[in-house]
Length: 187
Image 1: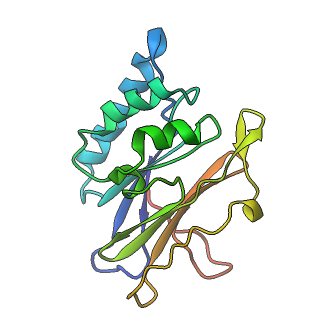
Image 2 (image 1 turned 135 degrees about the vertical axis):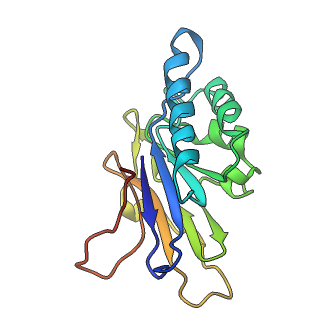
């Protein structure tokens, strides 16, 4: 787990917690991943200062089955902070949208590409899942398309973009070219 500090918020930074690869499943092996996600969410609530939201990046489920997304919804549905979901190579876009479409976990929409406007920043989630690739796979950056995420009425807001590339997740704020990505993890 890590938190991301959004540049431009030196006095009161916006903190975003990122959790990755919960691999929620059902059946005899369901207890361990569910328990791990519960523990991670509990750790987020104990952080001080508390993050403004949580991004859970895939693999959200172990196999992308509809029953696994229902199990995930049970876990994240009662969490008191906003949780935003992003697909991984084991996920199934259609099952994700069937379960979470229209909910705040996908910004109220029915797309795995979305953006969420927070008071001081915009979170952009890009779905780069390529279903034709082995084990789901991930799309190349040129095939992910445009999100249509251009928040109106903002003067260059800080942003945090979340996507998968080559089986690695990045949820980092953009920084000037050549600068290291600022991230902060809890002690």
